[in-house]
Every structure is written in C-alpha cells, then in structure tokens.
Image (cartoon, rainbow, N blue to C red; front, side):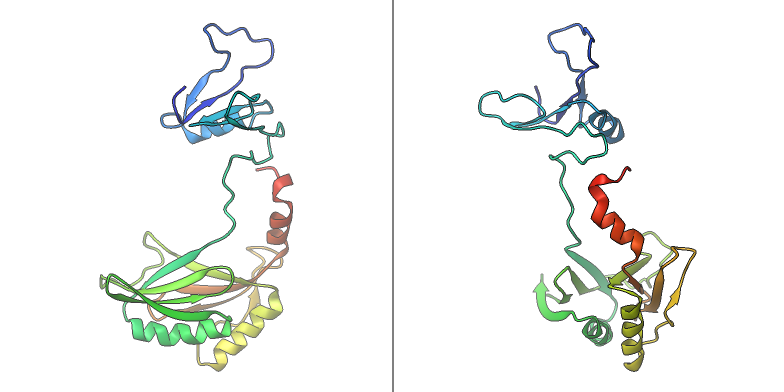
Length: 224
C-alpha cells in the first residue's frame, strides 16, 4: 500500500473481487470532499499514512487507533487547530504605526518587543493567545479592504461591557473609534466597535457572544 492512500470498507455483505475488500482512495488525486464523505460515513474506515493505521486491528509494530463510528465526531487522527499563533501586518511607515499600536495594544493589555529579520525591524505585540506583528512594507500601494487579502480583523473581549470599556479608553487616547452598538443583523447579541489603523486596516472589537460560546463548548457534539 502506498503512502497517502485511504481504505474505505465496503458495506456489510459486499463481495468485492480482487484480494482486498476495501476500495482505495488516493489522497493526492481524489478530492478532499470525496474522501471526507467516505471517512465520515458511519462505518469503521482505515487511514494509512506511512506506518500509521487507524481503525484496523493490531498488526505487528503499527500504531493503531479506531475512528469513532459517529459520523459527526472528529476522527482522532485529524489535527485540531487550537488557536491563532500570530498575525503579520505590513505597514507603510513603521514609526507611525508603532505610535498608533502602542496605544491600542496597551489598552488591550498586549506586551511589546522588537526583533529583526533580514535586517528589517519588526515590532511584535503579544498577549497569552497570539502575536500581532508589524513589519515594513516593500510596496507603496494603499490598503484596500475590498481587494484580495485582508478585509478586517476582529478582536474579541469577554462581553459587551469590555467592548464599551475598550472604546472609551481608546477614545481617551485620541483614537477615532465608533460608539459600541448592537448589530442584530449579525447576531442578536452582537456588540462591536470599529476603528482603522494608519494604513486603513479596519479593526473591530466585539463581545464573546452566545453562539460562539456554544460552538466552543459543544463542538464535538455539533453536526456540520
């Protein structure tokens, strides 16, 4: 069996021809959707990648795990993204953006340090969750939120009271920020405030609303 091939058991009672009772799906040539559909069917599937076998009986030195028969449960072999590590923003004037983000990130309780890559100064603001890095741009085009690329960046705080507190502190430091308000067209409890950095990157502060909490707490039991 070659690497990166997926074996899918046929239904009970099938009598396929050939030496194997499993049709083979190649992860390099078959669509991800097709493979995902087959793996997530309520049967025991086997995934073979190198020396890893999932869903089979123990055979020699192979490391074995079983895929849950529940079609809505994430198979144990799938990677779980646990957060955003860092975000890089290119800026046209590093000193100007540094002065702006020094205020914003202090209000949001980020810490700051500098480093260089290939002789270029970088500034990183970080909290316990992720880093936000400024680096000098190498092009002169202005940021356009409706061109391919970043449209806006949304930062989340605990609740609507913290949205209001952040907006008040930013405004006190002469940052032009919108008045926090409810946006029921997005969600019944969606509260947000908006502002823009010196290069026109749109920033948002919003609350940790109920749908997001439920998604986080019940992810393993939710259907796609």
